[in-house]
Structures are given as structure tokens and as C-alpha cells.
Image (cartoon, rainbow, N blue to C red; front, side, top):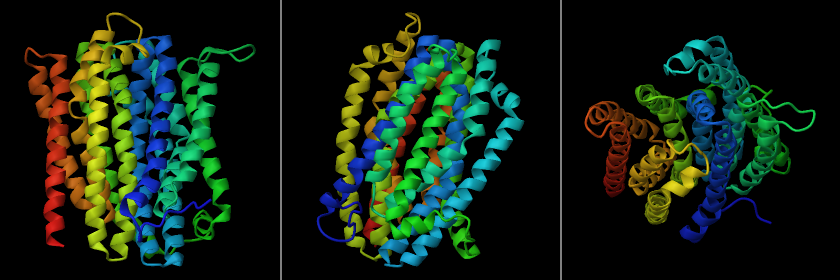
Length: 445
């Protein structure tokens, strides 16, 4: 069966569909992976959800660090594939993996050295929540290297037009996580109940399995097998180019996470249950944004290869088709979150006093989903053209507006719901701005 999709020739819709469906399916698997964690942790109680949610902010932050290697490697490898330069693709892939491993080791060390102040930033109210958050953070980030390698390899597979293998790898990891979560959280027979510690251990083990499957599957591909030979030195010029392309996307993602951290700290003034609602609601919302981000990876590879081949007409058509797909997906997720708020949230949190707060979050945030999907898809297209700096500047400026807007609306009679409206309003504006900017660029080329 053909693994790599030809992104340079033939039907654009067919090429995008072949590449995007496995990526979107992978994103849905990753969403299910995260929601499985929250479903089992939710059975322990909202305090446990708050602990995992606070600590998980730093695993989210780590994704921004990993983006330096993943985005830089994926974009430049895609350009090399489009130009027909296989040797250059190997150098970019190998260099990206080397950078990913070094960044992961440094991030894990720093997090474990400063665990207490990192969790202390959120001003959580319960000593038990704080203790559990510290445990989760030490395990999940101490072994973050598996996640970094998995994300970077996924980007390299996608750059080559192969989105099926990452999908299979993530399905295997999801299966392992579904078994390990209840086993390690609640225990069975000689295996003791470990609670939050068990959730962290299950997550790290699943990430290891995903990375292992991705590594084992590269043997049949000459280019990809060359990319994982990280013991061989990479010429500095390739490393510099990866960093130059990946750095803006990395900073954007980390600042995005930092803004969410500030908002989480603000939300703690309404109690730890409010933190649990924000973090769990955000995980449920990944049904929309992780899928859109996955489609963004597909349009990134499509745009990257055709940009490398200097076929801008095909880039334009690919973007418009992608925008139509994301519009439909965004409307679907809006309907799901708005009309299914109570039953969906009730699957994860069982305290009657918390469910209405969570349902309110989902309804409000649901109105922005179509705009969020357009934004993430456009960021992928811009990055595929090498315009990571412009995409990052727009994202940072518009996302930063959430902080003053949340403080203002949160201080009105809206209270906590004012914070949720700040997230929705900013997402609507970002979607409109990104689409408009890309349309202007396309008219100039």
C-alpha cells in the first residue's frame, strides 16, 4: 500500500484528503488519549483534575519548546522534498531530532529543579492539590523526551507525505493508555492504587510506546531511516536554518501557553473547582483545535512542498479547499459543545455543584470554534511558506489581548463567565484577521 501522498501533482482535494484524514484521525486519537486521562482522574474528584490540569500546563509549555525542532524540521524537510533534494531532507530531519533530544533533556532537568515554584505560580488553595500537581509534573516532564521525539518524528513523516504511520503509532499508544490509566490510577491485585502518580506514569509509558513504533517503522524508508541516525553530526548550517524557522513558532506556542497560565492563576480566585473546569473544558475543546491543528499540519506539508516547487497557484487552491473543510468542522464542533454541554461535561466531573460551571464554559467557548479552526489552518499554511515569524507575531499580539479583556470582563457582573467570553471574543477576532491577511498575501503572489 502506498504510504507517501504525492502533494505536487493531481487532484488537490484528493491529495489533501489522503494526507489530512490520517492526521486529523491522529489528532482525534490524541484527544481521546487526553480525555481518557481526565475521565479516570475525574472519578478521583475535581481536586485531582485541578492538580493534573495545573501540572499539565507545563507539558503544554513543553510542546512549545518541542515546536522549535518539529516545525523547523518539518518545514525545511518539506521544502527539500518539493525541490527533489533527498540528501538535504535527511540532514534537516536528523538535525531536528538532535535538537529535540537536547531540548527535552534540558526542559526535564529544569522542571524538576524548580517544581515547587512552578506549581506555586498558580496559587492553588489546597495543600493536597499542590502536592499531587508536583508529583505529576516531576514524572510527566522529567521523561518528556519521549513526547519530543514522537512529535518531531510525526512532523518528519508528515513532511514526506506519510500521515498513516503516525496515526497507527498513536492508536497503539492510545490503546496502551486506556489499559494503563485505570490500572495505575486505581490499582488491581498486586498493583497499588497510585492516583495522580499513576496517571502520569500511564501518560509517559504511552508516549514511549508511540515513539518506539515511529522509530521502528522508518526502516523501510531510505530518507526517514537516515533522519533518525542522530549519532551522526549535522552540519551547522542545517541546524541554524531549523532554529531560524522553528524559533518563532516555538516562542508563539510558549507565549500562548504563558498567557493561559496567567489566566489560570486569575481563575484560581474563584476556587480550585474553577481551575478544574478551565483545564477539563480546555481538554474537551481539543476535539476542535487539535483536529484543526492536525489539518494545519497537512496544509503545512502541502504548502511547503508546493512552495519548494514554486507552484503558488496550487498553494492558493489548496488553502481555499482547506478553509472550506475547516469551516464545516468548526460548525460541527460548535453544535457539539453548545448543545451537548451538560451531558458531555458530566462524563468527566460528577460533583453536581461543578457541572453547571463546566457546562457554561463549554457553551460560551463553543461559539468560537469555526474561527479557531480557520486560524490554526492558516497558521499551518503560513508556516509552510516559511512565514513563521509573521504567523507568530499575529498570534502573540492577538492572544495577549485575552489578559486585559479577561480581567475587565471578569470584574463585571459576568464574573467567571467573563473570562470564558474573553477567550471566545479573541478567537473570533484571530480567525477573521488570519484569513484576511492570508487573502491579501495571495493576491500579491
